Image 1: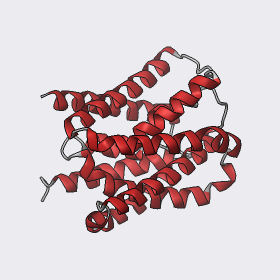
Image 2: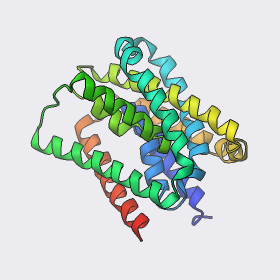
Image 3: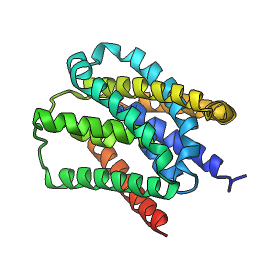
Image 4: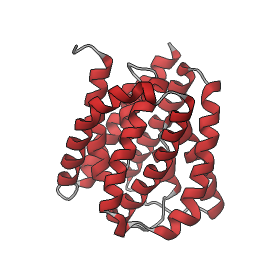
Length: 246
């Protein structure tokens, strides 16, 4: 049983949802990037995405007073929704190997960029409005493809001055909305219902991850914690690219 890839995916889910409860993003990127080393992305998404809806729904309700509505409604949600639909439409045209290669490249780029920025002490500067819109739409496309729009969206939001609590709550609302839409699409295309037994099996891990992440949110050194997570993602992205190229 310990060699069952779905058991290992459960370990990755526990880690990833703890991270999301702490930072406001990362659950799907971490769970999918680690899981993609042993399972097809298309098989994991109908399991992991609905789990994310349950978790983010709870966290959004608890942190609703911190949501930054002006940026959310005027910039992020409209473009992310359009991009997500476009990315979902592209998925049938891409094989699992190409999906892994593109996903690994995205994860590696994001993690290495963030580590380099931290190492050099580079300050985030605001993007132009046009670039922010293009990056946000691109984040929607990657979310439709891999349910992982976080890397590009965080980059798109670079320079927007939000404190940790506002950034976390705003990102959580984005993932709750987009993953709710994806879950409906999985229901329509027939992949959600067969995934329900595994989804139910992983529910206790979601609860543990949320409680642990909520506890650690105000107690961890955020920069050190982010360095650890980005290092893990960089290595994972590189492994995914190597695996896809073999």
